Every structure is written in C-alpha cells, then in structure tokens.
Image (cartoon, rainbow, N blue to C red):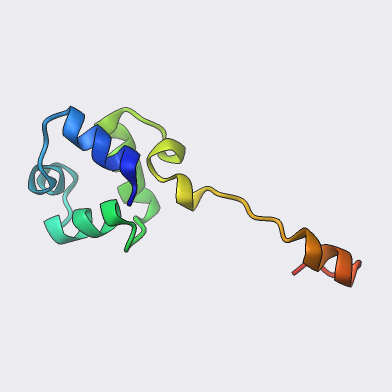
Length: 81
C-alpha cells in the first residue's frame, strides 16, 4: 500500500474515481497504483505529482529505493550483480 498516495488523496477530499477523471486514467488503475499492485508510467507519475503538489519520491518511495547487494559484490569482486 502506498500510504502517502492515499493520504494525499484523502486530504484533498477526493475519491479514486475523481482522481481517475482528473488524471485521465481508469478508476481500477488508480486503485491498483495505490495498493502497489501496478506502477505508474512516468507521465502518470508526473500527473500525480502535479495533482498532489508532492514529489514522486514521496508518493512512490518503493519505486525510488536503491538496493545494493554488497555480499554479491564482495564474492565476485570484479563483477557487480
């Protein structure tokens, strides 16, 4: 669940259907994005940023997480997995 995304929508008093109409996507897609079942494309992400006046990194933190597998790097020294 992308809690910040849901929080921003609720703070503006919007339903998922209203967000879908404003952004120009389906209500089902909004629901799946909020639940984290689907990831928005860059254009859709920008529309959420504009609507909520909040950076995408805060709305979609899971998409901006960087994971470095240091164990893999140490084991293969010259290769990066």
